[in-house]
Image (cartoon, rainbow, N blue to C red):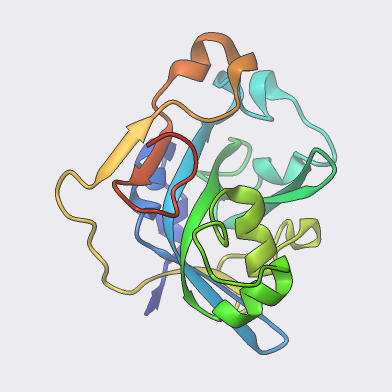
Length: 200
């Protein structure tokens, strides 16, 4: 499997990068324990112009400052004080594009994923939804800023091809506060994959 190079993440079109991430493989290696899963659902956030983005209007906080870094690093934030949500920062420095990884199809380390999540069996809830993704993969807010070129956290390409018409789009989930931007088709997912969260 080939690790995605920095140039993949530093392109200008966050929607194209989001779509291209479908089928790629997210890998973590914490203390020699490797877990991996195929990305089957993502959401794109288009920086300062996107009312659903943490960086809308140029907002900058200690939490979101990493969004302004050069593309190819992790942005992990805490949602509702419970869920650690893993995002990929894209494009160039000072332009805060990001992509939320919403669902994976497990590939390697399923026993470890079960242990981390406290689940008894590997059903579709294991890595369905962004909170479950981070929990199963051992990702938390301390990993914000990690380079996706590291050996501990990266995204790779194992040659998987989704096939024509298999990648679908829809409005994002849970961003009703964003007004008209909530209707934008910035969510991409692999059609008929059981790990995809929300409405198909």
